[in-house]
Image (cartoon, rainbow, N blue to C red; front, side):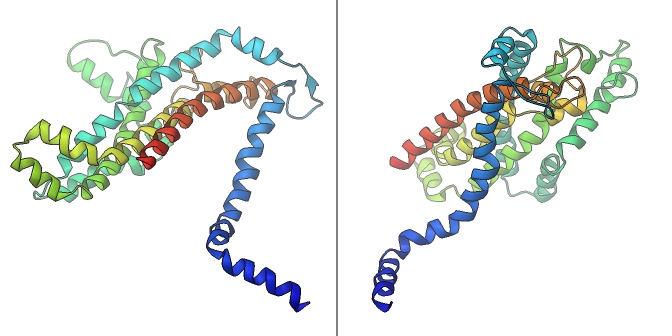
Length: 301
């Protein structure tokens, strides 16, 4: 018995630095596999069935995908997701500008920082409710401004031309605050020696920002872009609170369209909802894979 135990102990002792990280990672990997990886493959499998979530599943093959690509609501949701993606990225430069403004040593700056930080503390539900009242043409600020100029206020959330942009504007408020926090953290790590060297070389203003500060803020910029892109593609709460996809489905995005088809009282089509989820997953996978590749290349350099 001691003869067989000693080699095992010696192997563990010799490889403990390799084994130790996997021991600590094992619980997280297990939970990730059960609650993330397994549901992904389960959704892919369900997408080949017609199922209401309770009864017997009926194999339909690619019928859900054929129906999905013939559904105008899918293309409306996909178009809105693209609009979300493009406009949501404005949070990154806006957060940078706010961070640069707040990164000054003047009286009362801590108070100003806390004011800009507040939107990030609020939940998406609270933000959605605030902007729903804000846009109300009867008693909201938008209505009062229009009345002041003697004009009738538009119903932003009731007009299919404005509704998506109104929700995105509401979502940008906390997202800018989040990007600001990332940049403020990055600015604390900017090398003062490089700034002094840039000043000696005559760099001022925008040239200093472009050639000295922004390269050092690349990690914060990269993280801000990744989080913003993922937030834009998985946007759900703001639509659910402010419009429920209306008017007439014109503010739908893929995540809410999936919920509407699979879980709402209008749907209970788990197979069709799973097909939407699979399409959204592959769209997000493309972006995430690209960002991981960029991060890997940076680590190699």
